[in-house]
Image 1 (tube, helix red, strand yellow):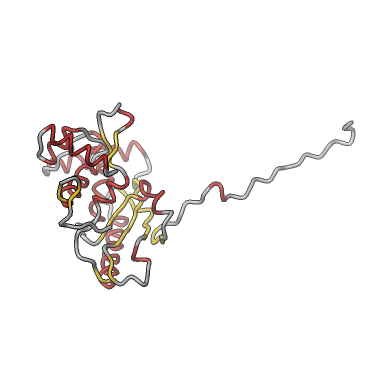
Image 2 (image 1 turned 90 degrees about the horizontal axis):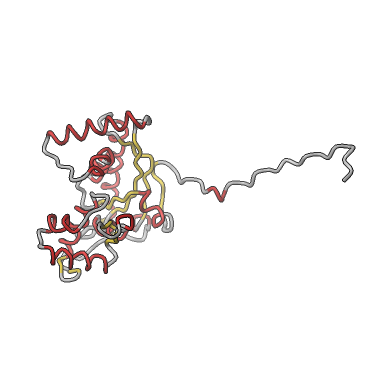
Length: 243
């Protein structure tokens, strides 16, 4: 997805809104105070900003908290990962994708990362050979903990949080701490590349599966509806059965 760097949304610069979506997207949920702090605005301005974002379909109320907190929508996450850079050539896009897949290899082969990449799905304009100038390279990934033991995975994650905290990184909520294993790997895969639009496959699956796509790592999950029906074993009636 490409956005106009000189455009506006509800009177706010497009790049400002994109940055806000990126910052809020790092949180599982957030409230008006978070918008005040991140956007550096006062309460009335934060309230108006949230109303604008909600009207654009970028955010929605968290139904589990009676409206006191908010969540980023799929559209909001897509907007947060959109590029404002000039279109790139297919040659540049191919090089960008190759560099991304190298980072995938590093993640899966380096014990430092607590997550592993189990799926990489390519979609978007890259798959249309007739398109020579692309806005970006759309990729969705699925991450899973490398450590299968839940308790051991939790301990490793807490150790990583402590390590990053000692280096100055801040965690504003317990959810950010719990998902450190995921967020750290996701950021590495993104690699600060302006040409990679990276999405979470589990979160974006309903969209990705409906458009042309290609699995580069892993494969599509089998739909239970596609499984052949179970054979019904018929019992033979005994010889003395009266019916």
